[in-house]
Image (tube, rainbow, N blue to C red):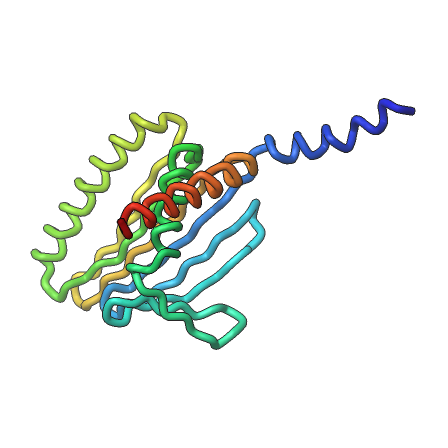
Length: 186
């Protein structure tokens, strides 16, 4: 009977160590300076935002509410988010990355040259990423419009990490960002 009590801590330890799969989908229309951002946890939608750039701020619109938040890029929250993303980047295991783009500039020659440059640049980036993360699946999908003006970009990214890595990275980034803010005041 006493051995059954060991199941509770074992469950919590397994919960911390079992990987969770996060999927991030981002799309951006460069002509409107607006886009969408969605986060999935094991195929369950967690958060969905519409965003647009207005001057030097980023305006976010929630899916269910019409409230808007203006985020200044020099705020301490952005510094914490930047440090947190650096910490997570080291610990995350990339599963797949898909890049989509739809470009048209009303000129067939300029459009085809630009799409060629984008494809070559993306393949160079994918090659360096594949050297760092050999198990990742990478793809690029292009759609070229020769007779209309459109600039749309999208990415689909899936990573796996454990809950322990997320908590550790957040606490570490919180400490590092407060230390940087304290050094900046001196």
